[in-house]
Amino acid sequence: MRLVIRHLSPLIRSRRRISYLLTTGILLSITFIFFIINQNQESKNFLNQPIKRQDQKFESSNNITTLTQKTIPTQRKVTWPIDEQGRSLKTNFLVLDWTGFFGSAATEGEHVKCSSSNMTFIWTRQQNRINEIDFIISHGADGSIPFDRLHLNNDQQQYTMAFIMESEVHSGTGDGWARFNFKMTYNLDDSYPEPATYFDMNSYLIDLLTPSIISFENKEKRADIVWIISNCHAHNGREGFVERLMTEIKIDSYGACLNNRHGYGGRMTDNFDAYKQYKFVIAIENSNCLDYVTEKLVLAVRSGSIPIVAGINNRPDYRRYLPEHSFINIFDYSSIKDLANDLKRIANNKTLYESYLWYKKHDKNISNLQELLLNEKLKHFIDVIGSNATMITDGIAGKEKSENKVCKLIRFVRQTSWQDIAAHKKTARADSSNACLQGQYILTHFNSARKNNSEPRTV
Image (cartoon, rainbow, N blue to C red; front, side, top):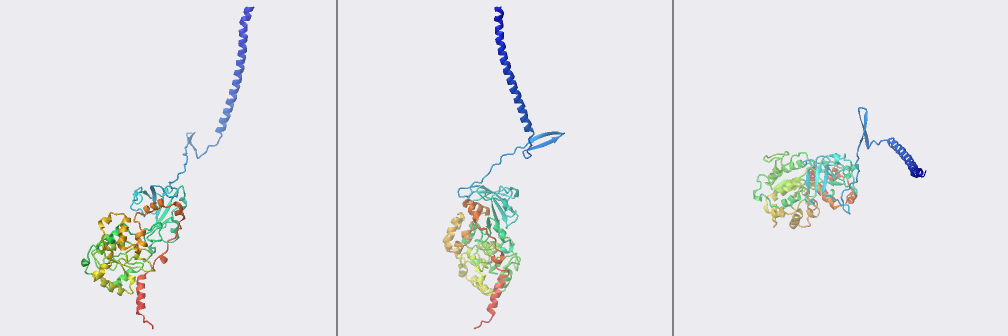
């Protein structure tokens, strides 16, 4: 009996352990079952959620639908570099040629380096890149530019510039120009930040200081005056004036207007070759407008001959472009006959003739001057004509920096805060009735003077 009890006692104790283990196992099983039920419910809720179309799309093939996930990158705000004053710190700029005129010689993606700032810019005509561009360049005030899509703030500085090289008579004017950040024309005072003229001051200053190519004695003997023009219907009526002047003094005309001599073509180089042979060059523009002075004067100066110009009431003021006593202004004379007589007198007197070229007599070395930067050239030029000359104080010499128009803008935005540019008052471009003399003014002026001189005076 004792033997039986001895063998049963461990079994009883073992059964207690088994009961305990069994109970524990049952509790764990119940917990696991509840966990599985909960997970199934969460899965159902997930599957019942609607799918966002902007992030996902379904593709169906043979009645089998698959879910394709589209990854959308996180959009980060990109700001353009500026300093504490709001001046651009960019070194490379993207320029959109909106009208396809300004960069007509440039190719898509062409890089241009600006010598004044060592910055570069890239040309593009792709208007769909408008969000990337730094400058939009427009020939004239093109109204199709989406100004409302451009930004001018601390994050992004996008500017617009309209330019024109033609007079107000032959190009667009009005309020459309006031929408642009920058306006660049030949008008020395109305342009912002700088004018866009026909003058390369690096070469123009050298041309002014260079002695005449052909001496007084070797100038053309058949006529003292040359005229080469292709536009025979100028707004100011210059051809009528020249025709009248031809009745008083010999003029060789190689162009299409009043042509009386052949031998030179219509190219600018041909004009220069002809100009240098004569004592005087008629350099009258097609319109008399504020500061409208073109390559006609540039070539006349380069030839070393004396230019004959037409300027009155500051339309234009040739003192802004030439040294004093270096040109013949037709409006300084009361009649065409008086003008012709004075031209004959000057042409027949070497001392008098060369007095109009006084600024070419100096001790400057032209070859050395050609190697200098513009600012250094200007200092030497001031030594010759004086610091008080209108050309220096209020003329082309102080206002034209002679570099690529875009390079002028890049230099400016790196020196000027975007806030100052935004605050600058934008203005319309004056129309021809305000900026220019009326049509046919030259002949009207001299006809009026002749009529006044012919009327008997009352005592």
